[in-house]
Length: 95
Length: 484
Image (cartoon, rainbow over all chains, first blue to last red):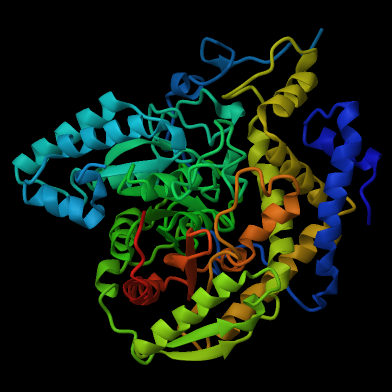
């Protein structure tokens, strides 16, 4: 399975990483190289093997669905590159 | 080099207990040497005022006979742990100005045990690298470098390993996802342990691959690592994968006999890329353990060669999800003057992340995307199960496994960063234990032909760090390794 330029463009869009036209060829080649190496995994017989989804055998803990934290929105926005009062701001999306 | 900074964790605490010096004096010595050794680039940030005021508070507690277990001990922190009020960037441009408003569980436990924050050490960007060359703040130098030839300290915890080896800290914290504590420990001649997954809380550690990330110490002796891990480990409600299990006394394990133990040697680790010097040290390690009364047996880990490609699907997949949060909105860098929201996201991420990080996000996004998920991600998860089964079956016959930590010693800056796969090969021996969540430790065992350190790796059963400390102490004594 090889990764072509249009697949790379789609993946870059999904990852929200802008790739300049001049970089596409190089990155495609580089990623293909890595994916080719990874295809070694096709040699392994995994027919009756369950996928490992977590390290621990225990199921995840549950907690009560209740508010136990909060009241510090000023702290939460303190690192925002742009903010108005205690809100994050983004470039305008509706004209 | 001053006398105080030559002391390890245990000796520093002894000196403090005997009132030979105060924490303020120790802290001043370290701040001075950190300032003088800037060329190594091991630290990216420190705050002398904060460290000295913490040291004074520590001295006050000691004066009132209220000394805590690590009272007054300076501790360096990899730049991936959130330290309240101190810039925490994971050595990425995208987090260049991030000031956490909270403290990671592990660091918080160490401060509660009397530790004194001494500074932030460099690392590969978001812990993605094996040479510390991907740090936004520049390469770190291995203190074992001879004058002309600058060597890498390993990575990703390269700043921590370099700092501990060069006496810029008695202990530094690291994190290990695929070898990021053990490989730099091997390259710099320090001890480093990655505990069992779930042993230390991941809360407040900037996430890379959440099913693999673990915190651990880098020190100059096995006993020092035991003492620090003791104070880092423990259940934490804030980490959903933290395991509620008693933390044993690791220091006691350091003096336990290994007589009658069975140590497994996997022939699958004798790969073509293994340097003869490493193989020689491995053979010596086997002999040291035998001399101490343990039995050496052969074990089979047949899926070893698939561990690295499995890792390079699982870790990037998890990273692509974890790093989705860096979007220029909530914190960190935002690209100015872009057209609309979509462009702001994609340009912020294009400029904020370095090359290796972008490479891994793209791979991760690809292997999780529709049409490719089953062929790559699901298959890798299944091979991961096979790797765990290998270890389960090996550990039904032995107590621990001995391997080299890395296929070679430290290499030159710039030597291996052209081809990604060449760089990935550094972690070929450390990644399997990571995928299985097992504890593993690197102990300095000898020198290569460049007179640079080589480490041996011990892999243990889940939550059996104690055996690693017992055998690690034997290797340490037998190797009689002289740190720089």
